[in-house]
Image 1: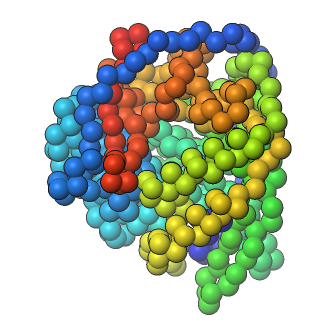
Image 2: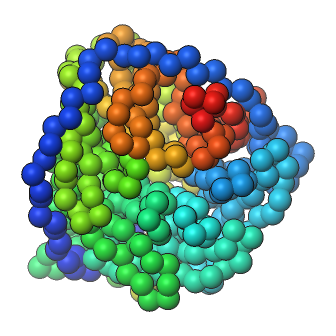
Image 3: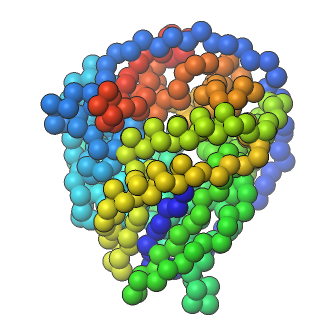
Length: 415
């Protein structure tokens, strides 16, 4: 699958953090199955007769301390707010590059000091709001932060947000090239005017990517980056208490990054990659085709000289190309153990991993904020967000194949 970014190319500043002595913490090899049966509370997006629930693409969700739900409806360029009972409260944002407007909004988070922050790739900024939707300011992201999409975005317990940026495009002797140093992990601790993010760490990609294909259009440059085969080990990020966690290998090895950018503990479970089967391949094709019903998985981003952005000219073209790519998808030979990480507002880490059974959806390990293994969930999807009180939001599709968010309450031991 190809995702194109149209950018003005600039130099990328280098940065790295020194590594501290790493402590390997074994988490055991036997799963403790958790009998969590979440109770459904409400759905939003199912009723198309209500204008506020006509989502185009749900890019992210978040809860505040009062269990209000914030839905980033990216292709409609808005944030929609619902109360803990699923009743519409407000919406804010619109398409544009002015204050409080969105070009290509990708992620959102509710911070510890009750602000809502949206990452906008086209406007190259963190857009800060109060929880009632009042625009506070835009915090521009300089070119050294990265010009690609964001791979991870979360509220940090100590303030602000942490995020990982995809490799940027830069100019090497007049020729555009993809920076291969890796993903850059940043901490925007302060949301004050003029505040800049701090580089915590550069995390190398799990495997070297193929060289990009470069096309020119006047004074703009199109960089087509070929995605690796399905099941190629990827870099996954999450939060565990106050520490950022990343996994970048085919094994179950969760590296914890402290506020200085050093890797301290490495949390391990002794699972090994297995060979990919034909059943795995067909299951993955169907999963990706179904995911497209939530909205286009890729964006074509156009950056102008002033930093303003414009959405893709034809999302239908993007979707058709993605469908064709999925049907001819290439696969790696081995299945990695970890397939995704997520975090909740109680500081726990959710580790989504593949199983030994071909074609199965996987299981979810739950780790306590101090890194202890609490148990494993079976036959449950990974939530988009989980509130401190135990409300979990799941992004799915309605019977009409439109994006929908289902909110469930986790049991007391799970909430």
